[in-house]
Structure formats: structure tokens, C-alpha cells
Length: 163
Image (cartoon, rainbow, N blue to C red; front, top):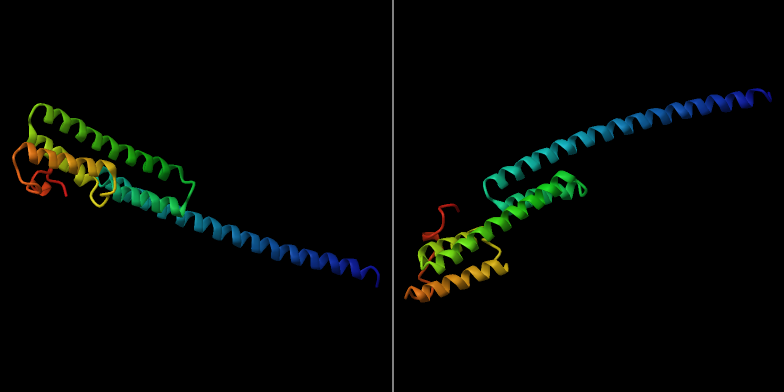
């Protein structure tokens, strides 16, 4: 009888180990599947974000990259593309500011208005941004210099055609 106890215990240990191994294998398989699904979902989101970036829809692109970072907070690609998008937006705004100032100094007021309107378009929906407010102020000053009534310049008439 004394010998049967340890043999039964070893047999139970083996059964327990087999169940544990099966559970671990199933868990690992499920994790691999979830990782694959998450990876595919991230790829789709990043693809949409890159398309928006190419189209110059910076805030839509940033929303996609932020969504990717919500799903995978340490995703290097999403972080990289988010920074790249912010830099592209800042660069385009800066180029428009430089062009507007140059045109103002050359007394090319309508061209300056177009550049300021481009800034308003780029920052549409973000009126609290200082660059947006500055562009609005500059348009008002140009209206005054051109002898127009305040509010007479409507940017939809002077933008670069994008909306």
C-alpha cells in the first residue's frame, strides 16, 4: 500500500502537468492570434493615417495615429508618423506665414490674403491656436490697408481651392 501512494501522486502530477501544458498552449495560441489581429488592425489604421497625411489632412492623420497609439501605446511607427504629421503641419503653416509677410512687404495684399486664408484652412476648427488668431488679425489689417470693410474678405474666395 505504501508504494501505491507515491505512484498515484506521480500519476496525478503527470495528469495535472498535461492539463497545464494544454492550457498554456491554448493560451499562447490565442495570444498569437490576438497579436496578429491587433497588428493587422494597426496596419490598417496607420495606412489610413498615411493617406490623410499625403492628402494634407493633418488633423485627420493625427487622429488616426492617436487611435493607433491608444491601441498600442508604445508603437514606434505610430509615434513616428504622429511627429512627422505635426512637423508637416507646422512647416506648411510656417511657409504660408513667410509668403504672406513677403507679399505684404511687396504690397501684394491679395496674395498675402490667400496665404493667411490657407493658414485658416489648415487650422480649421482650431481657432484657439495662436497662429489661427494671428492669421485672422493679419487679414483684418489687410482689409483696412485695402480700404475694405471689416469682414469683407471671405477666405473661401481666396484659399488654394482645398477644403
